[in-house]
Image (cartoon, rainbow, N blue to C red; front, side, top):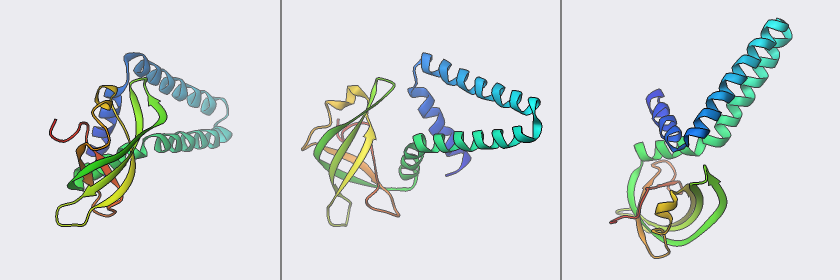
Length: 160
């Protein structure tokens, strides 16, 4: 994924946050930066080790929380369109920003020119769209060109 794609994904993620969460995120980033500067100024040599460890931890946490969004953006950019029937819908119990619940879908994917197959996937869904995702509904998905068991679900059911 290129830098432009990464920026687009980050912009989409930030657009999902409320103003309070955006202010909190900026505050956390400023606090982290100020803390690292103080550590470096107070004792430069051990400070470098502490800063390197803290940055590595921050990068790992960022990857842990956002790698699925990056993968989804890559699939949407380079994947193959397909239709899928929803067989099961269940909540994972995770909600982002009190608006975007994560749901698990069991889909029967029907790529053009291929046999149908089942795949289980999770996605964040706007609460407004939740009622539209029911067993039996047919939705548009994008299938990863490298691994057919990785799919990106569109934001709303096909044909609605």
